[in-house]
Length: 282
Image (tube, rainbow, N blue to C red; front, side):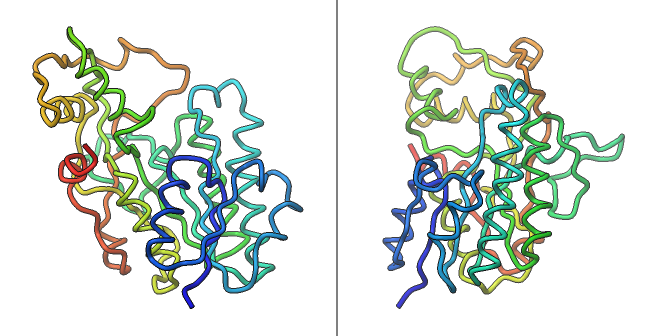
């Protein structure tokens, strides 16, 4: 029988797609929404987890701008909550994969040549959200050294409210669209990400921290133009602007591309190029 996959935070985009793909792979799946399993309540987690389960923690406070005003809540979910899950898994004898983010990096290379971030590059989050996620990484590995942290970035599905879906809606309209050109990262298709999460959960990879993002890097502006092209809209309607034209409460790293070189060496299958993934999503 395939290993049972327990998904915590199953109500979000990643959790929803993960549950469907895990079931297609023949796993027994237990999907737990935040209402069913509150990670900030340590006692609510253990009753759901059995020995030999593979737990994938997708629960997160992801409202990056709101986190600047609600630091306590962000840390309660992203740090303390992650620690609670890790302790519960360790006590039950279950495996754990914890989802993290490119926002643990600053984008500042101190004058040296920038490069896609590797798993052991220096972190330096700029926002409350990034700091809370990094605190969660430390807490998970302190509580459960054999857990996996999987960092990803710029997740999209092409549906709902993500960046790609928003660009699709704007492409169907008229007029120009201003998109920041000075934020560079690694777009990641949710369908490819969940495949990596399941691979990390199967217990064959020993590296504790992994990067799972589609190959290559791009700016938000270039990503938006690619969306317009793929849906048959004029990409010239997308105009580049600097991020200071669209100020946000939480600072974003201007560069946060993730490298999968070390993760691939550890045994994680590399994800396809982001443009191929974008075409598949659309």
